[in-house]
Length: 229
Image 1 (spheres, rainbow, N blue to C red):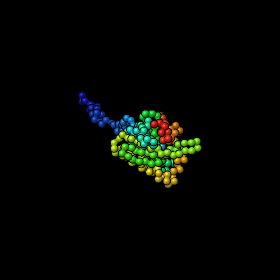
Image 2 (cartoon, rainbow, N blue to C red):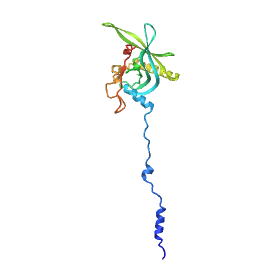
Image 3 (tube, helix red, strand yellow):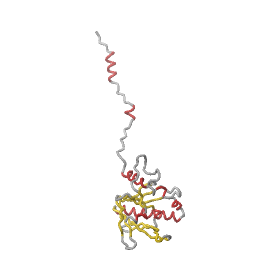
């Protein structure tokens, strides 16, 4: 009997057919999950807890030690404030639209952090060892009488020389910019209380999102700093 060839032809046809490729395999792309935030993102998140109007961190010194010049003895006295220093650009003034800047020292020795806004300063000077910030403090001498006294802070930083030079130059240029704004009559924003930056606990600007920790500690004002030597 002659064998039937139909089945063998059908079988060969079925085995030679190319395998189908699914649309999912050909079109889907695998995206690896993020392993974590960068150091820059972490720094920005931490500083923003204390300064909600933070726009960008411009410079960083790994450690800064704060000194106060004793006007009587002429000697430098070390304060209880030391930690990482950040030179920060803030969001522009909501009133004038002018740039704003500040210095933040996150205190590793306590819960009181030093935050100095450029417009608070009377002068900025640069020496070999220190970044010098000058401001005037009004002190009461009698019940109805007060006098202004010049106070000087010295920032001693541990960082590469080029980093320290950039920080000193940036802080001085930011102060000069703030002075030009003040002299041009655009300093109406001083009547507004720093737009929530000083209070820490006042408002919903703390943190980058849901679940962010509230900042531990508070801002130590320039006047208060002289009582913490």
